[in-house]
Length: 283
Image 1 (spheres, rainbow, N blue to C red):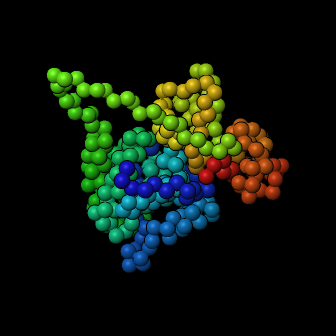
Image 2 (cartoon, one colour):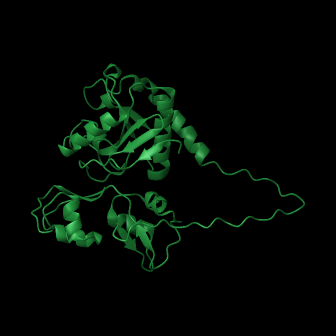
Image 3 (cartoon, one colour):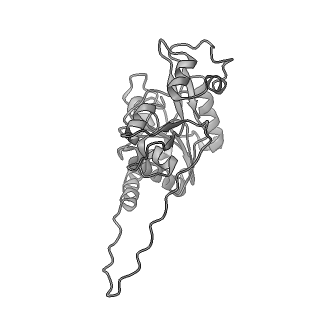
């Protein structure tokens, strides 16, 4: 990718898991108000703390922030709890200046999400789902975004050109050794047993995709070894159900209950938690 992906901004307002059916294009607002990238990120994070709305991505030329996983509902389209837009689309907040560089970054983001998470390359303006001027000038560029994203996908997935062998056989280079990444021992991880697959691990955590887990560990997803530690990327959130306690959730993820309580600003591992609230498992 040619843009910098920022993953440290995680909204606390995360909806249920979804299988995305396209993108919703937003803008930050009136360009005359001179909104900024970090300004809108902070506004959306505050809305998340108030449990009113969030967004999957904020994007401008060369920089993208992920606030909510593209595998989860962000409640960005404004068409209600059962709204098709809210429940099915990955939302992208775009810089209202809408320069050529801004548009190129948004198109590449769409292409990457299609490759990594299977998001179909179709897009809708925010105004289709609620009464708003959003996405402003971006609406006229939506057909271009989809077309350009398809071009980027084709280029990234193109097969390498096969060069005919010369009469003198070339020395075959040794394959690069792929070294797994190492994280602190206390970080969220899965210890591989015989028969485990990344699909099984992804289903257990119900957050990051198989491709994201493989990239986070710098591993071949089809080559797991018993005893190997698979580190789990965030953001990851648990929605509290009837019998849950801080200790039972910590046990499910293999975390220290006291650490999980501190991460969520709770007084201790025996603090009261309420059905429907969310526990941050990893930012």
